[in-house]
Length: 340
Image 1 (cartoon, rainbow, N blue to C red):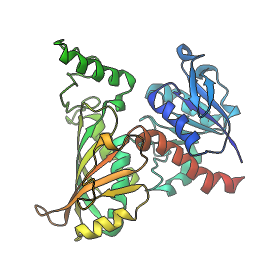
Image 2 (cartoon, helix red, strand yellow):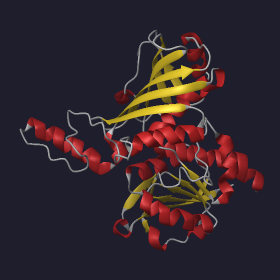
Image 3 (cartoon, rainbow, N blue to C red):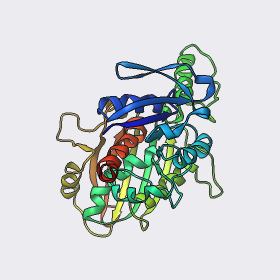
Image 4 (cartoon, rainbow, N blue to C red):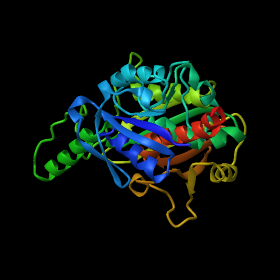
């Protein structure tokens, strides 16, 4: 069976990646519609060997599609995802707006595919935050064998998580430094070139940033409400690929060997160990890859039942577009085919 699909935010980084991945994975599409704001109407985007003309999101009839893969801003999503859901389409929403809605499943297919059982309440499924996705993919196989008590994570997040304009800012500031030009921050509160900024999103009342809050509450909703999470999120001058150093405390003892075995057997995870030629993996090495790459796995002797690891993923793929497409694939396999 073929499904008619609309990609909202088709001209953005994630929207273009969604179109690319739908083609790569031979998703069973009938018609594909590229949607964006009125100022992008008529622009062209690629879908495999085909070129799609961008249509106006504001006037699109969602009754003509089965699935909507949506990656605009949160405000746009708040308006149009419910409209699409009420029209009968199933929306997979990549923005933050619906993630903590109790009637909207928040899904990482390798971790909690069972959550899709509740998609029909609003016909909306939420795609988690990019930094949360890669962490819970790595945590799930460990949680299954030795229940997790607490996680402390420090992220090193690339500028592509802020969109194309942020990538341009990093490029222009880097070039400007070599030309003795003073950087002018616009997308970020401070210079991003040759720098690290310990602020992603706005500060909240408790002095956490909203990105850090997202990692806390989303991990609980996806994996286990009893897990305590301390997140520290930093923007770094990398174009694509998020990295995380993760410290985990378990309820019972877990050895390095047991952790490695569990991770190697886990879907969506690639383990790069010191015994391998690569030794460990960095963001520059995993651009365009689908898996979450885990390396530097070691026991933490400073706490009881502690473990540390380093994980890296392409934030535009597994952190956004790929996870959305995998949700759609799981939905078709486990729900829509049965209904048909």
